[in-house]
Image 1 (cartoon, helix red, strand yellow):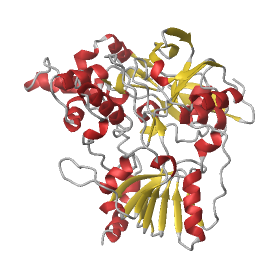
Image 2 (image 1 turned 180 degrees about the horizontal axis):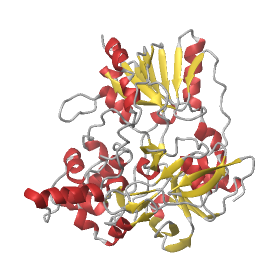
Image 3 (image 1 turned 120 degrees about the vertical axis):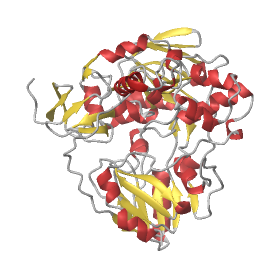
Image 4 (image 1 turned 120 degrees about the horizontal axis):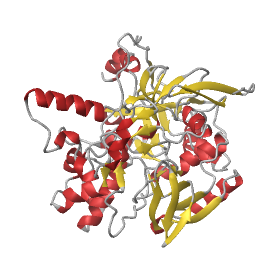
Length: 488
C-alpha cells in the first residue's frame, strides 16, 4: 500500500496497516476496518473501543503489555498486538470458548467444581487457568524501568476535569488571586464539549494546565492527590491542594441487554471522539438511544456524516444482535439493521475519586460525606440517572465484560439470598478488572435493587481504592520521596 504524506504505517498482529497522523491507536484500528481489539477474560468474547470498558482497548505496544490504545497516539512503525489469545495474536483458538454456557464459568475457572485441589493435577490446572485467563504476558525482564522523577505541586485550588464548568471554576479562582491547577485526561480542554459542537470558554493564562494527565488516587481525605500522564512516559505528580473541585462530568451507562459488549457499541463520548476528532465514522448505519439527549446526539452525528437508522429511548432497547460486531438492534418490538449502537444515557458521574476522598474503614471502605474543601461542579454535581433494568433481565447481558460477569450470574447469587455488594463482587469478580468497578458496579447495584425491590443507594458500594487507573512502576517509583514529604 502506498502511503501519502499524511499517512503512517504500523503493525497490528503482524500485519502492516496505515493510519493518519494524529490518530490514537484505537482510531487507527477502527479506520483500518479492525473492530475486535481484545477478548474477555473467561469466554474470550470480542471486545473493542467502547468508551465504557477499558479492557476493550488494552494491547501490547512495542513490547509493553496492557497499554490503553485510546490514550496513545500512533507513531510510525509501532508494533501492536492483541492480548489474551493463543497460540498467537490474530489466530486465537481460545475464542472457541464462546460456545460454552456462561453458567460453566460463574465465578471464574478457579471456582469450578471440577478443578483439582492438590498435587500435580492442581498445578496443571493452574497453568491451564493462567493460559485461559491470563489477559497479558508480563513485560520483558530486561525492560528499562528506571524511575521517572516525580514533581510536587501545592495549588490553592485543584480542578479535576477540563470541560466548560471546570474551566469556569478555574478561571473564577484565578481571578480572585488563587493559584490554580487544572488537570484533564484529554489532549486538549473540553474534548467532549467541543466534539458535541459546544463553544468552550477560554482558559485563563493564570491557570496551570496539565493535559493528557489523569488523577489516579486520592489519599489522606483528599489532602494528597496523585496524578500522572496517561501515556506512562511523563513524571507523576504529588499534589497538596488547598481545595479540590471535581468537574469530571458524567458518562453514559451501557444498556443492560444482550450484546452490549459487541464491537460497534459506543458511549456518546467515544462515538463523538471518533467522528469529530478523527473523522472516523463509528458505523455506516448508526442507532442512537438515550434518556433525553439522544435526539441532539443523533443530529450532531448526522452533521458529522453518520447515517442514523434509529433514534429512541434506551428503555425501549431489547437486544443488540451480532457476532463479531453489531448487526442489528431490537427496540420497541422491531428489528432495526445497523452496524453501530451509540448510547447517550443513563448518565452518571464516576464516584471513584469522591469515594477515595471520603471513605473510611479497613476491610471494606464505606463512603462518607465529602469534606468541606472538596466539591463538585457542572454535570458531575447532577443527580445520577436511574439505570433501566428489564423486568426479566436477559441472563446473557454482560454487567462486567472485563470479567465475563453476566446478569444471570449476579441474579443466581441474589436470588439465593446474597445481597451484599461487596460479597457479590468477590463471588463473581464483577468490577475487579481494569475498569475498577466503573461502570460495572453501577449495573450491579441497579440489578440488585431491582431484584430486591430497594434502591441502589440503599446498599453500601464496594470499595473504590486507588489507583483508579494503571500507572507504570517507573512513575510510581518517582513519587517515593515526594509522597513522604506530602504526608508529614
